[in-house]
Image (cartoon, rainbow over all chains, first blue to last red; front, side):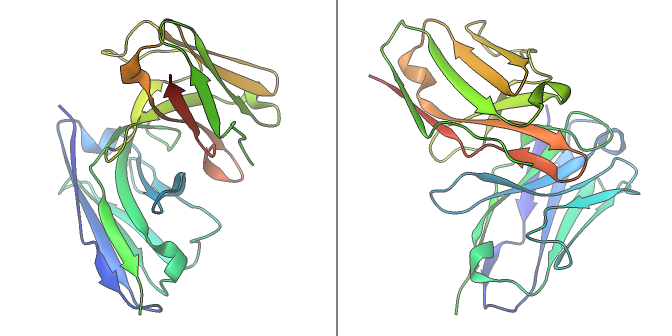
Length: 120
Length: 106
């Protein structure tokens, strides 16, 4: 059974930084791309970032490019999202999502999410 | 790249529900559909345009043609009431979700 456990969310001031982590189990981690998807309160889903199974290729939404960095450690079955220069509109629940393929294409399993609140 | 969905769809129990998702030349890309109930993460109900994951009821089906993908729920049940999102991958934009459709079973 695929399990994804996010951590690292919390309250941060505008301009601050935060690192989210996701520990994965139940599948061959390096064989699948991983994604971060966020959902602002009472809003829809927004894809944020994806990383290939090898970690060589990374992808970002325009809204976060240059501020967020995705990385993975296949030896620890872990994917991270380092967020800097956070803005109020980054406030959202951030979901870690396993992709159905080696390169990002579509999530097929999701964690429960971790809440990031950017506020002064 | 953008995907457009109707904000809401209403259906009577036992009737078919149809949710559309439109995007430029969408049929040249794979589309997935996700169901999200309040307070829960999304669940994939359709992937690669028409495939249904194990555990998803057969009443869920989908198609993708031209500029639109369609999710159909035949014999809609009260438990199908949820938000539904279409999703695709664009080589320039990356992952893209539609705005979501709230399905109400009246």
